[in-house]
Amino acid sequence: MAEVLVYVDHVDGAVRKPTLELLTLARRIGEPVAVALGPGAENTAAALAEHGAVKVLTHDAAEYADYLVVPKVDALQAAVEAVSPAAVLVPSSAEAKEIAARLAVRIGSGIITDATDLEAGDEGPVATQSVFAASFTTKTRVSKGIPVITVKPNSAAVEAAPAAGTVEALAVTFSDKATGTKVTARTPRESTGRPELTEAAIVVSGGRGVNGADNFAIIEALADSLGAAVGASRAAVDAGWYPHSNQVGQTGKSVSPQLYIANGISGAIQHRAGMQTSKTIVAVNKDAEAPIFDLVDYGVVGDLFDVVPQLTEEVNSRKG
Image 1 (cartoon, rainbow, N blue to C red):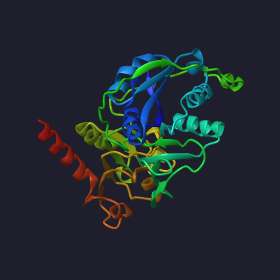
Image 2 (cartoon, helix red, strand yellow):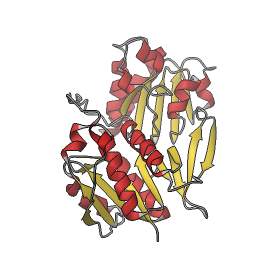
Image 3 (cartoon, one colour):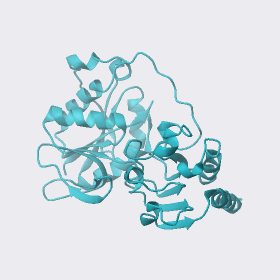
């Protein structure tokens, strides 16, 4: 069976959930070979092996921390040359998509971004995508070279499938461009205690109808009762009510949770493009004609200031 490279997203050896999802998808089309780079790379082996990695290629060097994406592109290119995989799978984060695009150019291959599913095909892996602002769902495959595919978080359930997980050192020679852009400073992001927006299983979002920054406390309370991430529409972000890092939509982040709850969001195409692949969508809006209701699985026509606190209270009471 052909091998499939999986780029590992980890923090000091702690593997992030989207990588484990990639391993599940990789097993559909071949034998997963994980590529872990940077500090703590060798510490990823146990988690990767538990979820199906037959081999873990590791490499650590100061360049991965001191410079931007090019050193990681150099390493992935070295892995491609060493393995000759059937495909390369990468999480759909901002940095990883840049790595994937550069890699595709380097190896002369086609690229598919933001896939939501993956299956084996007679002529190579077939990816499912949501395209044109989520107006269409397509089945796509790369027709030239080794497919490079980025996959949106929450596209597959994490499944344990113990494998050998043999650790091997990856030989990497950095290119002249690897040190072209240096990281001069880092500021740790303040933790809210909530899940990462793009990885969360549940997202609770607020829009123009929240009517003020202080009122987002209502949205946060519901999110906390559900163990969810908090999102916001562009209108709410542009008004200064919530940080841009929490914006969901075409000019913000794309999410695909199991449950998406939209509160006071009209459902403009820009917002829908960022959340339409959610598995179950619930909307609360006092305008019965709001476009969001054309999309939802469950809709509540009502004032969010009445509905959301009652929902929060009900969730908390059932938890208790």
